Amino acid sequence: MEEEDSNPGRNNYGSQPGSADRQKRCSRGEPRAEKPGRTSRTFRKRAMYEHLMEEVVGEANRRKALEAVQRNQGAPGIDHMKTTELENHLQAHWDKIRAKLLAGTWVPSPVRRVEIPKPNGGTRKLGIPTVMDRLIQQMLLQVLTPIFEPLFSEHSYGFRPGRSAQDAVRAAQQYAQEGKDWVVDLDITKFFDQVNHDILMGRVAQAIRDKRVLHLIGKYLRRGALVDGLVEASVEGTPQGGPLSPLLANIYLDALDKELERRGHRFCRYADDCNIYVGSESAAERTLASVQAWIEKHLRLKVNAAKSGTGRVWERKFLGFRLDREKRIGVAPESVERFKAKVRQMWRANQSRSSQQLRDAWGQYVRGWWGYFRLAEALQPIYRLEGWIRRHLRKCFWLRWHSAAGRVRALQRLGLRGRMLKAAFSSRGAWHMARTGSVQTALSNAVLRRYGFFMPSDLAAVG
Image 1 (tube, helix red, strand yellow):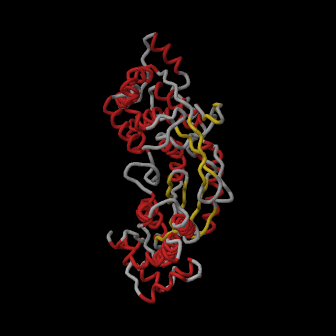
Image 2 (cartoon, one colour; image 1 turned 180 degrees about the vertical axis):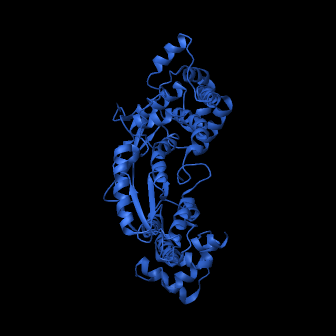
Image 3 (cartoon, helix red, strand yellow; image 1 turned 90 degrees about the horizontal axis):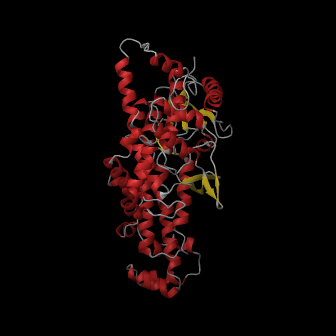
């Protein structure tokens, strides 16, 4: 039988049908039937998880959560409080907040709705909690993670301690090298907006017995967002933007992991991005159809038919990477195009930034980009772009030198003399001038490197 989606033998808060009858039996002195060898383990587990709120509000846990919130910074919520103001707020009000959490009467604030553009079009809705609610969610996260983490599948990589997108891509490469080079690429439509609260809370309640914790999580799910001065309550979904959301997503999708494991599939899941690796086209088509039906029935989610599909591993991207025909890891063409678009944006000449600010912004971006994609083994497509990137840098500086006189002075500062200065008086466009000998000599690869304008190959050379 397939794994049930909401454990109908248990309600959202962990109680079993017929619990009233058992209480009557206990009141009459009748013993409760227990399977041999399980009484002490069950008792210890319930005792541990029935008093979680005391652990959540513990001083050490609060300090650790405060450090995490301050380190991550982030935008203010609807109350406009900044992370830098949180510590003073806690000094004045923590005793009352702690008492409300212990009593189960804390009421979260609505999130601030923000929409950000997706790389492939459309927008993603974010819910920005107040920094106080961010702290409480972080405190919950720190206590719940050790409980749920051992229960998760080894094929789940997203937002888990000690695991990364790169680990998922390495696992995908291994499956392909073993001959599973057909991939089923699943895209769940607006996953974070369509999570079913009853199913999610039922799964949380399978492990958590403290009703104060369960009610608090439920409040965060249902609180909704402040939009145009009015609160829109949430009847489904888990808002992206709070520390707790990724863990709740993994709890929800763990049922999918267990179902795929039961079927014996090779797969990698990173949050709502799931790829299944099989040995043939027919197996891929069958798997896509059956898993899609299972997701819609048991998780009450929709699979995006337009974005989901099957193909060879070198035809489908995964987490920004794509394997080539030799099963080497490379940067997906879509990721390369986004990288090029960012280069064009960052090296526009009409920015109110100094050269040092342009350099620092570029350095921060390219180091972050390389830190993610350094896993790639087929890097020649990226290295071949470096001449094009440097041409954009040179074009940007040429335009920022403004006039012929300003270009003469800049070229002289960079060591040019004599006939090479004639380029400053050219009427040709900046993109053309960026390829001329004068500009390439003045802003040579070595000069750009000396001034800190690094390329991916420079970062690769230093490890």
